[in-house]
Image (cartoon, rainbow, N blue to C red; front, side, top):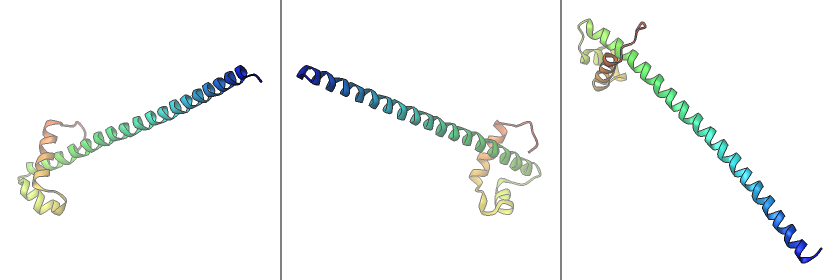
Length: 104
């Protein structure tokens, strides 16, 4: 093989290697993009689910308040260590601003 032929073969090999590398990078970037979409979708779904549950809890707190209890009584007498007055207030306000149509 001549020097010119050797250089041409080397260039061809280098170009093929670069094409393979670019394809590998594109495939990896596509996989990463799909994974990122899956992560962000799961986080959005989790947030929506948490908000739904928070609203439900707030509705029940509001039902208890409607029976004459205070936030303090709901927390200390009925919910124990599972709920603070601040959190109960937040849930109550959330339920008032985002009412649902279903049973609470």
